[in-house]
Length: 417
Image (cartoon, rainbow, N blue to C red; front, side):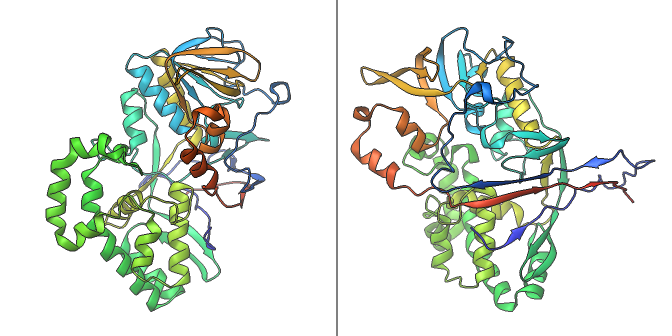
């Protein structure tokens, strides 16, 4: 993980907005340290239902799409896990007429992206860096496209800077190239500026290829041939012509780890390398050796151009989860909380359902989708149905490094000038 430490600055009100009186006592997020251990960070283990406090937002026994038990034990498609990926998948399936059931082990939906409260302080447990929620069209944020399909929206506050605290000093980091060059020169040195320019000069030309593909179609395996290449071949060919030989050659690395591009440029400055790892971690949850180049090139093209902004959902990450859950329920989808899947049932070479830890069996008419990690999914499957090559690949794939995530809250009066 990057040696740099980052802290977000409190969002300012929209330009020109001045409340007539100070707002009530503000309670920003708070106070608890969460450690993710490498051997267990990706593995979500069940906790006994009677030992978990219920989420008041989702009362047990209600059948309006959220319940603590599965009353109708069958569906067209079963989705294991209610992380962002699982909820998006379930939402689109429900939107297009499938009877979908999401099974979540925890007492609230959202996976790593849920929000929670402690003593009146509200936290985001996972992602907090967002952009593109208000954009529309093929190049829009994929999550925004899903919400749009579900007829849901998430109001956001826009900002273009945050405070950064690193051993070299503290500075207000701004989106866009000009100000960041100044900060690099002040706190790190001219060589860091030169390396950052070298990186942007290399990746910006590649962005034409990244932009030719909607973000929703980008994936890191050969499945991209079916999801993107056929449909978007004309725009890809046009972008390769625009980039010229050097840019087109670089674009062949888009489905490789971003670290390969960084290494090929000979970037050595420790701050620059750590900053790149930090950006990869904030966006993808992994360092540059695990982040897909296409995602990072797309980000650089968006962030380091004039006038770009970041967005933060009003209500935190939980507002996104609430919108997805609302969309799923709107189209008849179901979510069962405290429903830990113990085993995926296989018959005649296909997934036909799941068995819960409670012993209940739920049948799937068409498919079972796992939003659990690859390691957990492997444990859910009978050993004789998984190819040995795939099993070995999963077992040798390294998990996320350990890190400490500290949430701090301050009980203070906030005044806006």
